Every structure is written in structure tokens, then in C-alpha cells.
Amino acid sequence: MDNTVRIFDTTLRDGEQAPGYSMNIEEKLRMARQLEALGVDIIEAGFAIASPGDFESVRRIAREVKTPVVASLCRALVKDIDAAWDAVKDAARPRIHTFLATSDLHLECKLKMSRDAALARAVDAVRYARGKCADVEFSLEDASRTDRDYMCRVVEAVIAAGATTVNLPDTVGYATPKEISDMVANVMNRVPNIDRAVISMHCHDDLGLAVANTLAGLAAGARQAECCVCGIGERAGNAALEEIVMGLTTRRDLYGLASNIRTEEIAPTAQLLEKITGVKIAPSKSIVGANAFAHESGIHQHGVMSNAKTYEIMTPESVGVRDTAIVLGKHSGQHAFAERLNELGIKVGPAAEAQLFAAFKALADRKKTVEDRDIVALVENETGRTAGAHDWTLKNYFVSSGKKMYSTACVTLVKDGKEMTETAYGTGPVFSSIRAVEKIVKHSFLLLDYQIQAVTERRDALGEVRVKISDDTGVYRGRGVSTDIIEGSILSTLNAVNKMLDDSHAAALGQGAAAVVQHTFEDDLLTGHTDR
Image 1 (tube, rainbow, N blue to C red):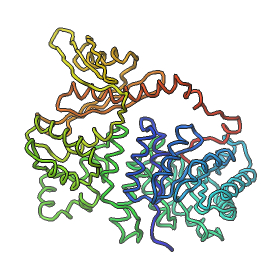
Image 2 (image 1 turned 120 degrees about the horizontal axis):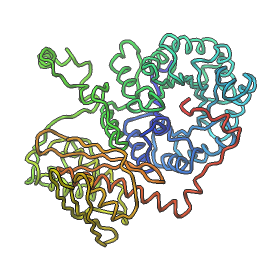
Image 3 (image 1 turned 90 degrees about the vertical axis):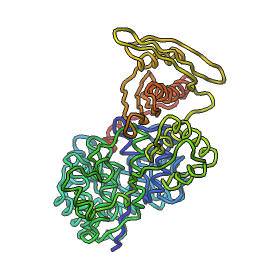
């Protein structure tokens, strides 16, 4: 049996479905490129029929990434399969991923179908998909609560119909590692044509066992692991990609399995997800959390200084964690700056490099010491912008604030070469600045969330501001960095406002109406939760 585990990343599909993690098309493309650099074998790019936006993001990813397989999820319906194929057909390595629930609970309460009817629908769906695509995956939704005899019937039938991968999900995170191991062993030992397909695991973390269950399935013979960066996803999330990969890598003596993941890209991938979504990684998160390689206890510090293996079972460098201070300042030249970008693994073109260098010089005038984390924050701030030619940009601002008085902000923005200035009052300088922005753009919005934190230590630290705003068209996130929290607040608000105005303009042109997806009663019965 092949001892290489295929890593199936569903960050852009299952992960993106989780509240707070939605991404626009450009953000998904950016994440997909990083997943390709990470070395994932399969990228599940989305659920093509869910919306025109989902379809377009899957299609764009399929056309742009070259190495990984690109998959689209679809229900066991002809129109779903057609949409999935239309979205992925231009990929170098396309896959159609279709699913249907198989547990008696789902069959009786959700689908209102008999076992035989569900089996026939699964076979028909796989056969139809295989007529379009050579690579077809079928998932038995709620497999961990499915009758074992019936499971074997379904697996054998869908493989005979053309499925090349069969997924046995623990859809609701109910199973234990022993149960998962027994389930996979049962299929491996009893399905006669099992050698014609790869068994896959897709485990949810409702009981905190997603990674343990996935590893148990792999040890029992599964050779594909479905996971998300940082374990994001529906409800309590999915198995975390970085934990599965480093579990296999660190304990190869136990599992005897390997993956194609470039482990040094793990931390940069997690950091990119954090920057795109605005959702912070928990400090205690294994592998990629800020405290994963931190030691405060004197006993631990002494041990690590003597031999890092005393308290570190993997090196920070092995997962791409860097925390080296850089000696760059206002007198540094662009060549030295470019060299440091290269050392940090940051690849940008000449134009972007010049833009970043200008931002670096402006920062260096404000700070005595510029560190790696400052550089990374600048890169994310500059390259993460999706500003277009007709977006609002900040030219200047002035605030007046004090105890027992209203704060006043005077903000000047530029759009299409024209300056507009407004003054606003508020209970604080940040609030009044945001109100001034709202008056200039002439589009009301609510501030749902505001967060600020220092990128580095000391009084001259670069501050990172994240905001979440909403209007009638949706919820939008923005991010800005500056040594001045008022400037950072305005920049992050503008970042979100420009996205909001783009969507509002599209809706006004009627594109919002065109984006409505019609569902039939049969669709509703078959939809269920798309986390499988």
C-alpha cells in the first residue's frame, strides 16, 4: 500500500462556510496560490452551484493553480454535477466531489428516502460525474453513524460506478478514534473492489477529536486526509491541516506515513489566513500559535538552552516560524531591503517591491528598530489591498480630543483625483474619524467590530487595526497598519468601505438580482449541511 497521504484542503469550501471566514474571489485566489506553495494535493475550491460568486471563484482557481487537483463539491443532482464540472473543467487536474447522506437518521429525517433509493441515487450521480471527469470522489455523509453493512454496499457500488476516492466522514464529530479505526478496517476488509479507490477521512471537531480520528483512519488504511488550515470550518471546525501533517512528520516512527506538504510553508499559510479573514489565531494553537514555541518557565528555558529537544519536539524553522530581528533602518537601501524580503520568503515583483520599500522607509522614519514582524505586516498591508483606480484613499486627517469634551475629526479623502473633506464629532477620536469617513462616502454603515493590537513590542510599535462593518449588502472586513492608531483606524475602515461600495455598485446594476439561486423542494431535501 502507498504510504503517502494525500492532503485534501477544504479551507476554501468547508472552512469558508464558518461564520466570520467568508472571502471574496481575490482573497480566495490568494489563499489558493499559497495552498499550492504549501504543497497540498487537492484544493476543494468551493461549492460551485451555491452562488455565481462561488462558481466564479472555483473557475478562477481551477484556471490559475497548476499543481494541485482542483475539486468542486456538489450534491447528488445532475444540475449540481454540471455546475461543478463547468467550474473545474479548465483545471490541469479537475475533480468532481459529490455526496449523499447514508445514515438512517439522515435518510429518514432529512432525505425521506429508503436505503435502496439512496444507493441508486449515489450510483447514478457517480456514473454521471464519471462521464464528465476521470477523477470523481463520493462522500457518504454521516458515515460514522451509518450501518456498517449498508456502508459496504454503498462503497462497493460507487467504486463500481467509477468513484476514484470514497470519503467516510465523521460529519458531526461524534466518533472516537477506535470507532473510526474499526469503520475504516471494516471497509478495507469487506469491500472486494476497495483496491480501485482511495479511502478518505473528513472529521469534524465537535468533541475535540478531529485530528485524532483522522490519524486513526489513516493508520487503518485511509490515504487521503480532508482538513482545513487552523482547523476552521462548520461548528467547532475540521481537522487542522498543520496538526495532521506534523503528527505524521514528527511521529513517522509510529505511523510510517508521509505527505507532500512543504512544512516550512505551514506558518506563512496560517498567517495569510489570519490576515485575509481577520480572525486571530489563538496563542495556544498547536504548531502555529504565538506560544507554540515560547518558553516562560525557568525550568523549560534552561532545558531548551541546553538542548531544544528537551521541550520542543519539532523546530520552529521546520514549520516556517521566524522571529529574527532585522537591522534595517532609515538609511538602508532597497537592495538590503529586497534581500531581507527574500530571506523571509516573500516574493514580489519590481513594482510591488518599490511600493513596499517606500512604505518601509516611511515606517523607518517613525521607528528606531524595524523587525521582521513589521516587514511582514507591511507586506500584508500593501499587497493585501484590493484598491482600484476609483477607490477612496486617505490624504490627511486632524483630530482634537480631551477629557469631558467631544472629539472632533477632520478627514480628507481622495477619489478619482478629487479631494473631499468632512468634519465629524464623536465620543472619541476613532469614532469621530470613522463618522467623517461615512459622511464623505455618503453611504451609511454599522461598525460591528473594532480590534487593535501591536505588531511588535515597545512604545513605537506598529499597530494593526481590524474592523468589521455592515450595510444592506453584507458584512465587510478591513485592515490597516500604522504607528498611529487613528491613521490605522481610518485605513482599515477605508479598506472595508471600498469593498462595501464595490458590492453596492454591483447590486445597483442588477448583478445582485442575477446572483439569486433558485432551489426546488427536492433541492432542500438533498441539501443538508455541506460539511459532510
